[in-house]
Length: 112
Image (cartoon, rainbow, N blue to C red; front, side, top):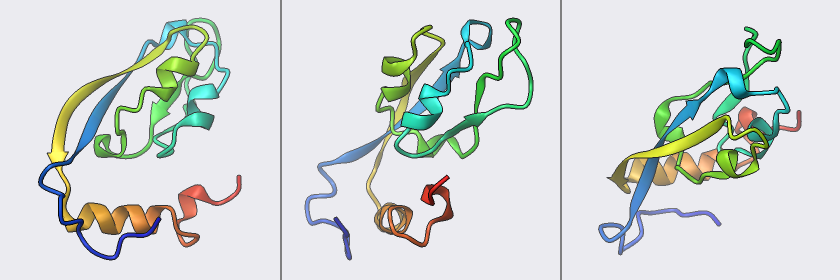
C-alpha cells in the first residue's frame, strides 16, 4: 500500500521504536533473525563469539527497528530480543520513508 499523504488520523497512531539487544555468546549463527527482520536491520558481523560463530549486528539506525519481536521469536537460542525504546508520532517523512523502502528502488530489499 502506498500513502501519498499523511493520514488524517495520524495523531492517534504512533510508530514504536525498538532497541535490539544481542547476547553474542549465546548465538549459534543460524541467521534466522537476519533473514526474518522486516526492516533489514541486522547483518552478520565479521567478528566471532566464544562458540566461533558470527553473531548478528545492527546495520541501520535504531529507528528502523519497529519492535516487532520477530527476531526474538524465531531465535532458537534466545540470543536476541528487543525492548520498546519510545513511540514516536507519525510524520510525513515517515510516510515517505515507508513508500520508498518498499518500492523497487530501495537497494536494501533487492534480491540477495
